[in-house]
Amino acid sequence: MKKVILTFLRIAAFFGVGLTILILLYNSQNKAYQAQCQLDGIPAEQCSLIEKIITDFQNADYFWIFIMLLCFMLSNVSRAIRWNMLLRPLGYRPKFSNAFHIIMVGYFANLGLPRLGEIVRAGALSRYEKIPAEKVMGTVVADRAIDVISLLLFVGLAFFLQFDTLWGWLSENAQIGKSAEGESSSLPWILLGMLLLLSGLGFVFRKRIIASSFAQKILSLVKGFYEGITSVKRVEKRGWFVFHSIFIWVMYYLMAYVCFFAFEPTSHLSPLAGLMVFVFGAFGIVIPSPGGMGTYHFLVMAALALYGVQGADAFSFANIVYFAIQILGNILFGLIGLIALPFINKNYHPTPSVV
Image: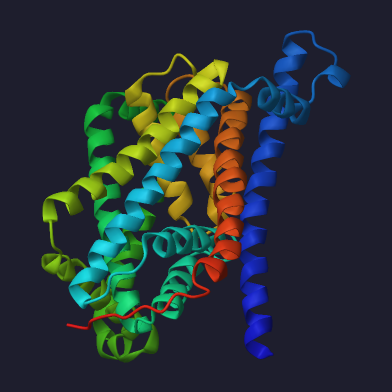
């Protein structure tokens, strides 16, 4: 009972954080939208941000939203194939349908509690394919480790290709180092002093810190990350493995870019703008909130601001992408997976040949 209560509280806390960020963003954009309406001479009763968002959803080009969802599904087909490639060196050949549906169920689980999907993936595949859970978990770690590397490569590519745009925006908006009067601020020195103090304390108490359970968990995660990366060396057909690893993230990028054409205020943006929005949005999903709720919106809006998209329009775009993926993608196909898995495995008896 205690574990159930703690799990419920964790889920409620994560949803609370995501919902709070979303509400704060809405309130902030609503104020700006009301101010713009006042400047344009539009009566307040005819100026509702929520009505604008609903109208933007209704006026969106659903052909491009369909293409975005197609890219989403293709990425998951490729991910299921890649996951099976990681399992084969262990002596197991799971059904593709099991791997695919379990991945979708994992995404669905992440909406309740961030990173829960990885545990669900390991447990479900272990159950249906009769593979030891610890072995499955090792492949999940490898899968996520490759994703981290892929994301970092895209981040580097985006910052390399769009450095001038990003630096120009930071130069115009960053206030660190200057006060409101333009005078030098002591904030950087305070931050440096705190960093040096924490470093000194860390060195003095290093033995106690290393021996702590928290540090051991971190070290265990690092070890698991390393083992996950090195396990890739045993994969057969490495060329195809690399292809699927690239294809998954190209589809993720296209999901952000093609959706530009679904919404008139973003339809003029370039493929490089799509790359920046994709990278910012990816960090929004990685930050622990349910499916990136709030954090995804905030970072996508920040990326679109680099290209002059107004806040209210950027908020509508973020909602169109977010709800299309989470509602039509993760929730719908996650529920389909939950329903389908017991049926497709009703008379299935896997016979793994352990190596």
